[in-house]
Each structure stands twice: as structure tokens, then as C-alpha cells.
Image 1 (cartoon, rainbow, N blue to C red):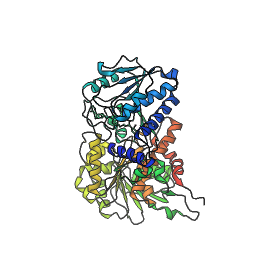
Image 2 (tube, protein in one colour):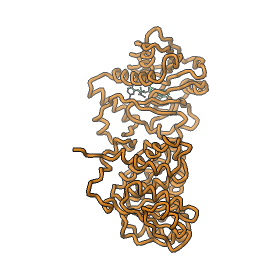
Image 3 (spheres, rainbow, N blue to C red):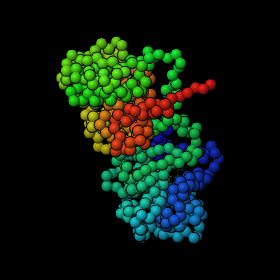
Image 4 (cartoon, rainbow, N blue to C red):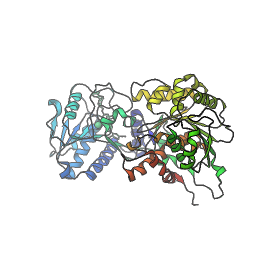
Length: 503
Ligand SMILES: NC(=O)C1=CN([C@@H]2O[C@H](COP(=O)(O)OP(=O)(O)OC[C@H]3O[C@@H](n4cnc5c(N)ncnc54)[C@H](O)[C@@H]3O)[C@@H](O)[C@H]2O)[C@H](O)CC1
Ligand SMILES: [K+]
């Protein structure tokens, strides 16, 4: 799914109106009716109690007026609060006139009427037309609403939140429990700093022009299963293990052989034909016993890796999980960057070594995949001012070093060398547990070994890793989820996205 800017969303509205030969008011009716259907499916009139609909002067307010009318028609008790304004949009005015006289209307000029704790409030003050932070009466209403401890549902976007850019730290933004938006996600929904405003977000289709969306260049995408169609074809009958590549993992040090085991198992469960693992001497027994399907190539040193093996046999190489940062391990990394012909996946301590020796970044082979969490990414670049700035740093970093960078988080974001960002849609908070990053390294290394492009390996790897975590959490719950549980569900996750050709 593309992530459009507020401006592109407005253009999508206009294109839809032109193509379907409808008026904007018809599109508003469609959007607000979809919203009403969403709400009434979740709250009966009794559960909802008296619903307060707060409407601003633009089309977001228009959506609120349509929702108020529709809810009234369906037997809900509704009242409307109108923000004072010198001018209103045309569709606001049309729907103000259509509001049944039986719906009480309050002027918000005198402030927010008293709201019972837990009352249901629909926030239709401002949507994507917001051009600057709220101030004056609008800001005061938002602050009063946030203090009221109501059950707030934002229509399209919490009022005060900008769709594509940060707002100043102290500006007034509605804190919603749910945000119900239309057709495509907004960047603002995907960033941790906005979670307290957005709450749970939902998308409702409203039939925006497919053609316009397809033709519009988007700098950002939200990855869902439909995007992955055909990336992982069904295995042909006469396939053999050689067809699926030979992966090499360099992982583990004293006390961290578990990281090597997790990456190994994940790589095996993600379809690599063959896997060899380079571990220090102490890893030999552990690895052979816990993952007999992998070949082990022990380093001459006992506690950490000191020598790079011959790289010829391998179609992809993953380095980092549990590696440690010993001087001789760093030398192995330096040699790997110089000699690798096969694609690289770089994680954990290998990233920290790059962070401590930034001159090495210039030696990254093109199309390498890096998988930092935000702290590791910061060590490679600089501390970010906020989540938006971090995305800017990500984009610049990928362009500068011609690499793919998987910035791990709730909506893991992959940066590609030409500057496009891909946000992942799968995964859950249970995956914030030691070892889940090691699993991801194994997954992506396996996909690269199977000759997927760096973009497909990173996007699909992150998606399948998150989906496996979601399937695992259904069994274990989020708190009980271990990295090893993600490994167990990789097979089912990949099965879901494997394309079958019946005919
Ligand atoms: N495609 C869709 O998703 C559809 C969206 N719809 C809804 O329309 C709004 C966007 O409406 P628009 O009229 O462009 O903007 P707003 O309602 O957000 O408000 C604009 C209004 O407010 C003034 N304004 C802007 N910034 C400020 C400020 N900081 N303080 C005070 N006033 C401000 C501005 O001058 C305008 O007068 C979208 O979010 C959806 O809810 C449609 O219903 C159809 C489909
Ligand atoms: K809103």
C-alpha cells in the first residue's frame, strides 16, 4: 500500500470525483457512512450513550456532521459541538443544513461543554487540511477534551496532528483511543512519537481512484501481503538443495552462542538449501546438537571468531549475532567487506564495529543489508531529534552507502538506496525480546542465499518474521513469546505468502 502525503490524498479525492463524475459531497457521504458503519458495528446505542461530535470548519467537520446525522437516523443519541470559524467549506455548509433539527448543536466558542468521563466523543475538528499547529480556541478545546478522559475516536486523523510532519512538542493534539481513517495509511500513524495521539488505527476503503493511486509516485509504502505476491514461488518438483543456495553465518562468542543458534535455526527454517555456520571453538558442540541440519566450521580460537573462512561456496553471508567486538573479530569483518563476492547481511556487533570504525562504511559492498535497532542505527549515524528526523537520516544513509537498512521497531522501516521507505505491517510487542533480531538475520540471509533481490529479501524477511511472531503469540501470548517461538512459526508464515500456480 502506498503512503500518500496530505497533498496527494487531496489530489486522490479530486481524481476520484472527476473519474466517477460525482460531487465532493458524495465522497464525503461515502467516507462518513463507512465511518458510521464501523462505529455502529462496535457500539450499540446503549453502549455508546450520548455521543458528542466535535466539528471543525472544513471537510473533516463535514465528515463529523454526516456521521452525526447517520448516527441519529440509526437511533443513537447525538449532540454536535461546532468550532467557531469565519468561513466553512462548502461540504460542511451543505451537511450543516442537512443535520436534523432534533440533534442539539452547541457553539464551542464558550469552551467544551462538560463531558462525563468515559463518554464517547468523535473528533472531527481538523483532518488533513491542517496547515499549522493549533492555537487559540481550537487548541483550548483540544486541551479540555484531553483532560476530560472521554473515549475519543478521531475521524481521519487526531486533530492537531499533521499527516506528514512533526508538530512542535507543546502543541495541542487530540489523544484518541481509536483513529479511523480512509483508504490508505498516513505516515503519522507509523511513528512511536504519535502513538499516544493515534491509539489503535483502522482503515476503511472509500473507493479512491485506483488509477490515481497506481500512477502516483510514493516515497513510502506500507507492506501488506498483497505486495508480496509472486516473490516466493512454489518449489518445483525437481528442485534440489543446490537450487536454494548455500548460506554462511558468522556468529557467536563466549556466552553468546545462543544468538548463533537462533540465527542458524531461523536460516534453516527460511528455506536456505545449505547452511554453514562459523562459530568459535566453544560453539561446536552446542551448534551441532541444537541444529544438526547445519554444518559447523569452527574457528581456531575458543571464545570468539578470529579468521575468515574461504568464501567461495556461499551465495549469501550473514554476520553479527552474538559476535562480540574483539580486535581480531573486527579484522575478520574488515576482510569480509574487502573479499565478499556474495551479498552480505550485517547485524548486531558487526554493526557496532562499523559504528566504532565509521571509515569502514565506505567499504560496504553495494546492496548490503544492515539490520540495526534505533540505538545501533544512531551509532552508525547520529542521534535523531525525533522519529521524522530518524527517517530522514535513514534515507540519507541508504543513499550514501548504496545499502538497504532495516530499522527495527514496531513498524520496522526498510530504507532502500534510491530513498524509498517500506514500513512493515506485521509483528507485535511480544517480539521485543532478546534474540528476535538474531532470528531476523537468519531469515534475511536465507532469502538472499536463495537469490532474492536485496529489496525482496529485506521486505519479505521482515514481513515473514513479524507474521511468524504474530502466529506464535496466538499460542504463547505476547509476554510469554521467546525468539525460539518465532523460529517455530517461520514455516507457516512463509507458507501464507508462497504463490501457488495451479494452472
Ligand atoms: N480522501 C479522503 O480521505 C477524504 C477526506 N475527507 C475529509 O476531508 C478532510 C480534509 O478536509 P479539509 O477541508 O481539506 O481540511 P480540514 O477539515 O482538516 O480543515 C481545514 C480548515 O481548517 C483551517 N485550518 C487549517 N489549519 C488550521 C489551524 N492550525 N488552526 C485553525 N484553522 C486551521 C483551514 O483553513 C480550513 O478552513 C479529511 O481529513 C477527511 O476528514 C472527505 O470527507 C472526503 C474523503
Ligand atoms: K479529526
